[in-house]
Image (tube, rainbow, N blue to C red):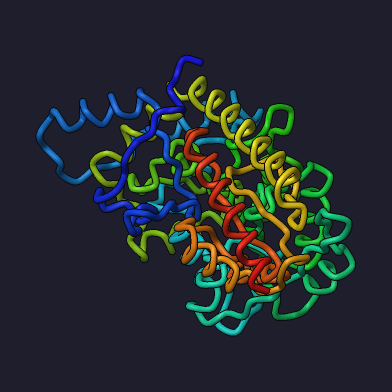
Length: 389
């Protein structure tokens, strides 16, 4: 490998949200990697810092062309740059779109278990969460298409937030699935907001498909959000792009992001993003190989040492969803006990809705040495929990 994904970086006392923990604790929870970002990004930020001037920034055409280049070369989709708008983050853009595309009291549809912050964007804006829960059977998740169609058809359902690929289960939506969602949404006048922030992080042979690329129906009835933040571990750059092929919808959402003051970049956002999208391909491919290896290590370790648990096979994200229902249906208590007894900090699944109370989520985007430490702590914590039941 050309890049060092084995370096054990000490991130304590660096204002890191993830690493704001006790000295004996190991955080493997929030979606934040323990790898240095791609060198091209660091170089671009250093060059910008060397100018010594950090005034108001505008978004140049080069930025949008870099986004287009990335999606054309990495995901076989070259969205028109006229469809794009810069925003300071995917979640702020979701909240803004919720306010513009739906009305107070409307239903916003999700597929639980799903990224918990979606719920905040819905409820905090006076809308109702309506979930068509994914069906868990025989160790895997599927869509209840009849239920999804029925909930799309409810008169108050005006918007759907799609997680593509899906966090936390790691599902890579297939083109046929996306087309079916798009057709249901169009028939029922439901606008789809597709959060594709994890799209670059997939196993080899399991690339993700942008929602708007699967059909003209999907393109004309959707807002797509992308960002280098998860891919390159640069969340604090506060840079993302929304892509909206439909001109009328684009004008509505554009007015919202300007009203909400989401369209002005910080001094490093543009240079860092352009560097990511134009120099970071090889780095991402090696990152993905590392993450795949880590997921395989975790899966094998749990199969050998923790037979009461079951790892959901997901081919996207660096977040692993683990079924604990044979051990407990209260993983909030389980995670608290593991943290108390071993220092391992992982996420209880209840916050993701649906059947999340049976699951935990573990972040494996770290060096193999740190992962092994986490797995050893997990085994100790699970065995202690079993003994105390």
